Length: 270
Ligand code: NI
Image (cartoon, rainbow, N blue to C red; front, side):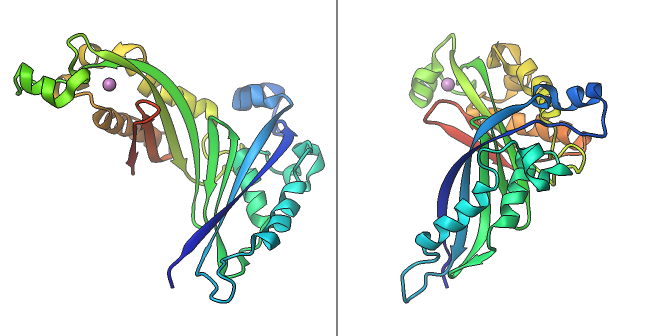
């Protein structure tokens, strides 16, 4: 039977601090940065059930039955300070990864003809986590600005103009690129994170910002003398840089997404 997936969204707010009770203040501040201080987030939760359509009622899961089930899971967190008020987080850091694991444990694996296939929890517009039965992935988004000119040296000026149009402009043009970096893994038992954000930020700074932020890709970046700095090529080069560096640090890059404009998006997967 063909599988159809249904998604239902829920919103909640919760307070927390990321703090390991067995560590010194200094170590906590170093590991968690500003997140070691009490703060809160407005979370957005998407719940996915997939299954075959029930011939009798035309549904996978009756949303009228699903609504209170999701509400019951979310209400255990909503409006609370997670570290102090939710038992689950007395021994675990209330990171977005662990919050997803908690919600997964509270939702029925099977409802109607459907199975819980995925949860997506967005913590801010820069951070979200996807969990399926087999894997968890955290995504963090960044922004940088760069100039480029699309020009193929083997073609004539007229052919380049025809092929690339405005993007062939002699002195180049610029974009605010949006970069989404997705790392796959299980949350560490001590930090509660697949990868500490401070560490991912350092890697993105060294491998992306230092090379490309406020640079002219054709003029300043040797890797784009032999290849044309289209966003396809830029995405591939960024993926390779991040994958190598993350692998060395013991992490698994799952994919990157590159927004060239609000309308153009490129993705490279492992
Ligand atoms: Ni462009």
